[in-house]
Length: 178
Image (cartoon, rainbow, N blue to C red; front, side, top):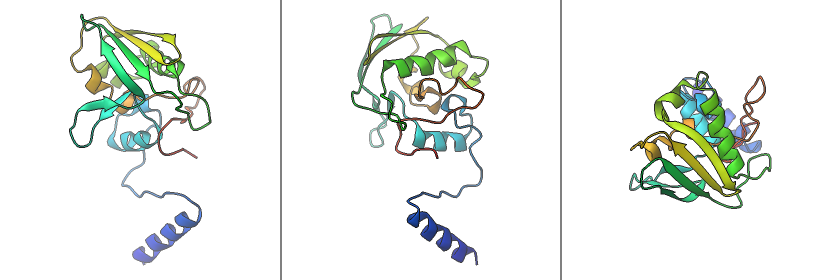
């Protein structure tokens, strides 16, 4: 009976051009900045993307939404050069404003984003010299900075997504939340 039910769901999903993913628990949060559990991380990783990610083969940090980056000699300033032509699911352009919104929202509301405090204790500012460049300032060098940027807590959200009472899960990832 269970096998029949799974097959029926699979057939219905294929007809509706949908993906059904069965798990033991649901995501506790769709806001990647609030992703504190494994299930939330898995779901948000399909909807949102970050500036960098781990390469599956080498386990090195590689560009993702950023095409390249550089660090200042003192390790306190990071400049990211963003990929052009990326769009959010609603058609809005991904640009430096989206990165600044995502990070400054979390910096200003540290009480709401406790995981942010662990991963980015020294991030003090984000500036946008142009549409495809983001500068991130740290109060001191932080060796695991690039590694921390691979976590869902650093994924980029649509500007305005956190402004209302309910979070709007609109990202640039391979899956769109409906």
